[in-house]
Length: 245
Image (cartoon, rainbow, N blue to C red):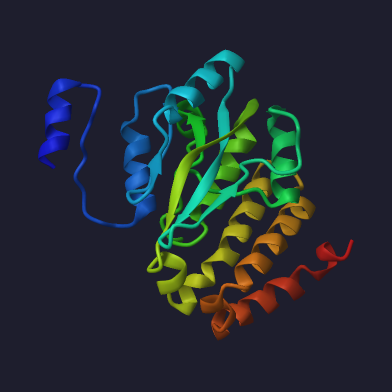
């Protein structure tokens, strides 16, 4: 903490907030409340960004008058392997309106992570958007979808800026069966959100959900979890008419 405290003395724009550990969503919500800058970007504690990460995203946002900027990112594994993840799949465009981007986002199964995205602070504050406190798996999906929905313009930078360290002790390997089933609640929350906006996104949302649920299903800790399998079957059959339109 001594190094961080020194930085706050050198640059008064830097704020250090100490709080009880109540999970990532709680910490992010505190940051959202006290933020005074034009943009917000989150970096998880064990991850890292390229040197020109924020500068490049900020300049792109300013140049194109964007509300949201999305970049590629890299999964760094402890054995030295790396896997590049595209922030935007199956598109040659770099500028989108919100509904165009959101539809592609749902249909192509784009990564919902908040960490490879830069959002205008006003998106959070004007629309009262905070991270859900009662979800510890898949919470990024809920928040990211809402922020993109309220964006007027979304931009995509085809460059790896963010590095996501893949920890063998990560949340997906350590959470219990009940917590793993929270992923189903994420989709229910989004369905309710779009209903409040008087918009029907069920088809796009459920296609997105089956993409990620299938992907998630083949992680060994999940595949062998009876609670998750039970929840998966219930979710699928409850919405079977959507999947086979």
